[in-house]
Amino acid sequence: MNILKIVVLGSGSIIPTKNRFSTSFLLESSIGRMLLDIGPGTIEKLRRLSIHPNSIDRVFITHFHLDHTLELPALIKIRMFNELGGSNMNPRILDIYGPSGLRMFLGKLSSPRGVYGYLSEMMSRLDFLRIHEVEDGLVEEVENLKVYATLVEHYNGLAYRLEVDNVSIAYSGDTVYDERMIKIAEGVDILIHECSFPKELLLGKHTSDEDLIEIGRKVNPKLLLVTHLYPAWEGREKELEDKLRRDIGCRVYVVKDMDILYV
Image (cartoon, rainbow, N blue to C red; front, side):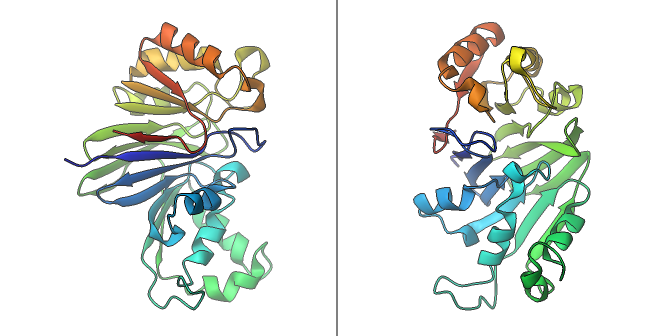
């Protein structure tokens, strides 16, 4: 029997707090290691876990904001080197999934006049990268893994549903209350959903606690993992957890960085 391991590498926003920083989740499964987003701090958290970045097989990007993508260029560059710092002549394949514009996003970063222009020659030879621009529907299907995506309301945002090792996981990325997210997540074992702000402080295209109650009731997950908390929630995590558990009626855990779950 395969056991899926979920590591919370980042459960906060772009603003660091005592227990949280930008977004990333690591899934360790029978078909390899996968990242859900790759915000600042991700690679350092992997180092703490003695996981080399070159062991990552897939990265699922929800949108192009810095707190979800900043360390993607670093992950790619590290793959060009072996563990001694020499050239890696045979890097393992890295599959990167993301919204429409993913190729342009990476291309602009590494073009001769881009932010990382010094990498332009190196980046032109990246035959180990497989770039997948996705919108709605089935994204990937291999042994023990099916991945679906849907557009959500957040600046060209995506949400994903992964069915891996007989466990179904829906990951919201950043989004407002969105029926498309609810539809793709319906009945999952684990719902990983943002809850950026309390309702009275809600800013931008994000989800509040009241929104998440409605979402949770409709999705009806076995377990809700609450993430992407802004500093407005600092010190109120138990209050949020108790409220969601009471009003949704499922298991709820407000995650923090470096939490590990086995399912």
